[in-house]
Image (cartoon, rainbow, N blue to C red; front, side, top):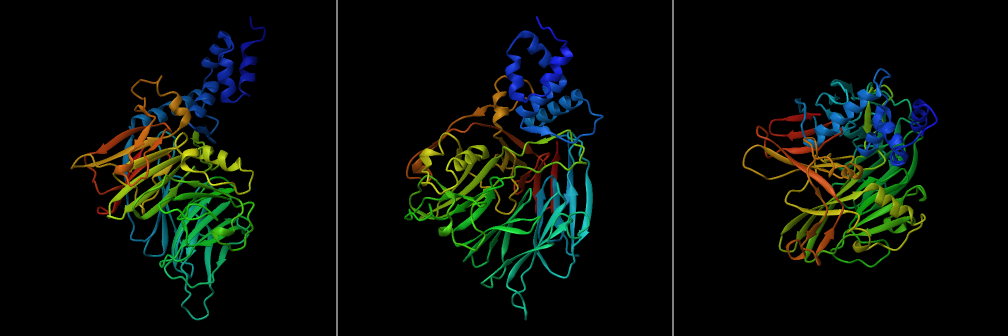
Length: 510
């Protein structure tokens, strides 16, 4: 028999994490009944099992309220049963961004228009505002992080003008006012250039205190990657190479690059694309080539045969931290997310094959950290890909323009199903959620789990058959009054159809 009052046991349980609570449930019948009967303890367990973390919601919300809201949220996503739709018109500008649930677009009159997308289930209200960014220079591109109100403006290079300085400039501003960001020690970051590249394109990623930029010249001769600690203005890494195709941050010390050579300082093997993980905290910040990187790990892909060209793109969006005044009851856990690599393989006979590769961030991080910081031997596909990742051959390839197709562990892609309307599919790689799929057979349960895929070599330009086993569940969705030409995006609370012909974003609100 238990000798202490139930309230004392509950107080003790509230200091435990979800794994310890699950163990305590198995100790005895009394503990099990206590934990199952406490909304506060069940909320801790359900947050973890659904890949969520507690938000800064106001104290008026009880644990029972949050638990019920979380259950509704997960059921709606499992069934893809959105509550409503809103239409956001496209502006007449040239740049856009979707991050942290905010859709932003430039306008022809020198402004950036922001639209906070709503969530009925997480109590996020729709909001619109604009910032005047006519600051005496032309804006080439921009990025943002709503959790800290950071707006990064990329200045158009004017190197052909008399007296121009050979540097790329990135201005750190406030999303609400356009003024210099109060947390930035220097309102502008500069990257010195040795070559006058015209018409650069930019890929920017903001994660916590890190700003990463990949500059791609129109001539595609030298790609330049830079990582800053944007608050202090410190440059952490600077790589210039013709072999970088894309990047994403894995953690606050590792960046993952798609490269067009299989490994560093190893003989080139035709038809073998690779990923390169770089520990930028251990590298010096002087401008260097890929061959000068000392702290890295190479991940090789399966070998392709009779290949003319391979294009790779890597994307991940772990989500953002919640603003203290956001009032949401829960939010995505940013520690675990899926990394998506798309490969477009063009054969010598002009046959095109599309592949999408899914890599859990925690797996990749565990491998690179096991190397002890120094460069280790390249990993062949057989030693890292089959058991821990998933490679799919797809009829459609994600858009190379509308690239926000992954968020957390979710991924969306268009499908060709019928002649009319729009069809797409949502994939979910949340490991803890998959634990509960088999026992959850109610109306809110997700579709069945897929655990194995065999890609046959002779049909896909591969030298050998490729097998991979990372489980996932997926569910198709369609809109009869949609259009098949739409691209699809994903955020924490929304699926967004991009209709360029109708010049609108069709937002499905959860």
